[in-house]
Image 1 (tube, rainbow, N blue to C red):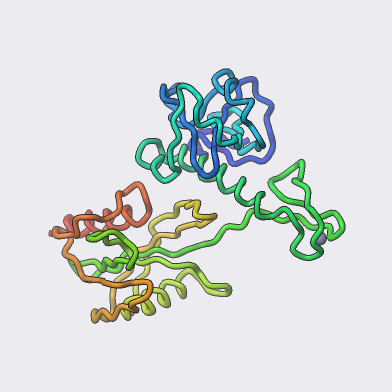
Image 2: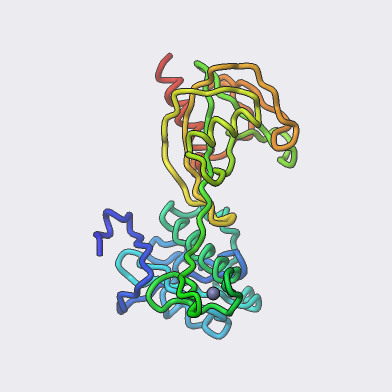
Length: 282
Ligand SMILES: [Zn+2]
């Protein structure tokens, strides 16, 4: 096993190490049941002793890997567990603000694996009921002799810049005043760069160049992998598509809209990087 340090504490391993201490992530539907009193600095994981009172409600459990060297399982609980003393139910998304990146990663992985199992009960080729593989995270069809793995959908997300300005846009369904970067799914057969050129052009009519990779983030709605970039604009006239994007503007780095995403999520991280770079150039 690679060192916990390299893996930031979390190892997405499908095999148990059978450690003495076990950690549990409790979920109800797609929400996480977190302890009111935090354990060892963890905000989402509970030890098996504490999990004991939830055992009765556990409908399915799945190993999701190791956290700081200890086996870590997700328990899918029935809704009655909501009433459990000393716990509160939180949305996955809100964990980003209250827990660390690694804990959010664990929770994302757990919820994605459960969701994927729910939606992959039958073989897509022959239609028989598949079984969960004993050795890896896969649903197995014996007649076809194939393993089906969790599907991850890559998306590109980009802050397009023009000197001291960046392009921020809003979708029609967002609350008033909320703006963010542009994003979209990579189409089958496309490279990330091609997807960036296409998405930006389709949504706001702007051409881009000098694409720089910033980082990535798993995003469980469902199974997305956000690949974050900064790019320079070649053209500056904005023509919104009116469907995915209702409004878009060039915004000065020191005069951004009131509501932009926090740096805990990729869009906010990109905006922050642009602001940091622009202010350093003053
Ligand atoms: Zn099959």
